[in-house]
Image (cartoon, rainbow, N blue to C red; front, side, top):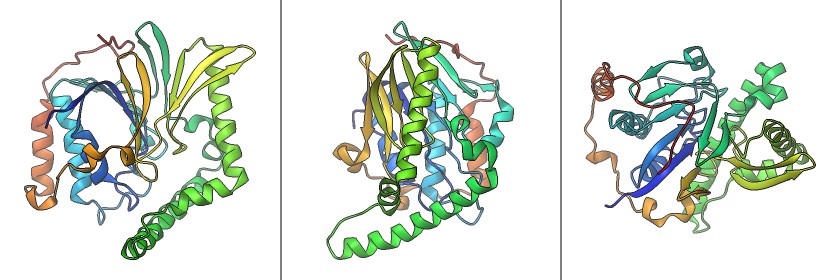
Length: 292
């Protein structure tokens, strides 16, 4: 299968290690693209809710695919989010073409781009971390219930529904939070002279131009792989929101687990380290991405 070339792909809020993660669908998508640079914008692995009892094969296959890109010298920027925040202590770490940083200030085709996860603007995250974690557990429980509901719904021929999206869209405070988040992010980006600002965190894919009395900025959000199954792509000088539901090519990718070689945890770690090539040196500048 010929892979679709993408200059930059931004993925966030995958939440590997949780019941709601659509790792199989993400893997199908990853197998259809050939990116020149990758930004993993937070909450890739959900360390908050991680359990050794739940780590399906597809979740590890996603990790292996990302590591495969690093092994091929594709620049990969990893920006930890609140659910994998313990990795923030490794800010500045690099291995081959992989680099960990808390935020990115990029120059792409002479445009200033600001990339960060977004939890820094979440008041609940900053002042009531225990409440945020409790909410995450409830959210995961709702996703689990949603899986059962969708199984019944599919049997009845009615298709899938998203309970979490329905709940969020019907609660005025949730809608207000999203609007306030976007307004705050855009105002700060405009004040600092950015042309684009890219976030994750709120699980709400978006691409829109925001104009204020102080200027304008293009706001983008990569969404998530729990509800929306979305990402951001930059190709031929323009950004777009990718949606798995609108991609029949990715949906047709066959990655049945039966065809995958079974490996122990020790074997998996050994193969990952081998692919990474521990002696490889960083091969890109974290402050600038040049797209041909």
